[in-house]
Length: 456
Image (cartoon, rainbow, N blue to C red):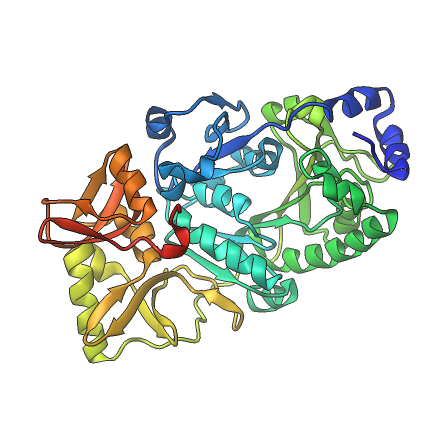
């Protein structure tokens, strides 16, 4: 492909003798990748369940390449068993495997610039089995809605979605998070092969504009990290101004953070950052198409070594159900997920319905699109459940309807399916992963899959 002239000059300066190999890689097809969503299925069970070719990606146990057209139509994708993500985009979160985060109980995670949700999904995998909470934020309203839809499909129960400027999060959520992820908006130089429009829109002026915005986001992000917590900064660009210069500026201004060096696995598929004379940038990692196999990516990880941790928790601007609503909700929960889990779930009401809000939730005072899992609404004296309730808690349902491939495909088209296993609400599952809701009567499973998600 033909690069913008000024971009080529800059990349020749960065890469030197490697430039020709870099440029040649853009004549190859981009790699396609996915990561397993551990909130729905284990990696071993996923490998046993897939019926399309996959290949292991060595830097992460949950990462795979795949070869399958229209993968978004596959029942396992509808069930949230995996998230399609460009391979190099998975490298920054994989750097966290060298830390203690997977073993920390009740891990609280903030993804500050989260849409469409790939890194949020990876981050949520860190606390499977340990308890935890994920706050996914996106500033752009329509992208925030896309983020909420993906969090719903993935069925991550202890998760909330916000639509806020990062400054609000810095103010309302100071010192709350064990991990804050900043996948910063950038000039997108690393996406030229995957998205040719990014090349056409590139300019030096835009690089400078992005760098200013990134500095502000990093300033806000630093304030949200608890002492002993981590800050992960990443971009999908190559410019020093947006990468190492931002890291150097961050280290100048935040002496309570120190660099974290990645393990040999990550170093083996990336190149070290470009040092500026003041700081050794080898802890920063650069992914290039001719080395890493995927697209362009930059990442740097920091540990906060001093400061304070906030014990502040929920601030959801919602009310507890009244006594009649509480009885209807508790009876419904006992009937669907059983008495034990029903007793543990904390339900709050908002104008648009009732939500199950995790006790670890760290929420800002405004801009909350979803404070947790939407349970549903009460209409005419009964609970009308929401799709997200099934996606998040389907594995706990007393009534499950495990479908074969033919039945699952019929279900995601919106068809009814014969079922004589139970009556009432149940979770429709495929390979053990919840697809959505059915309500069975007269041996027919009435389809409650949202119309907007169906395959036409």
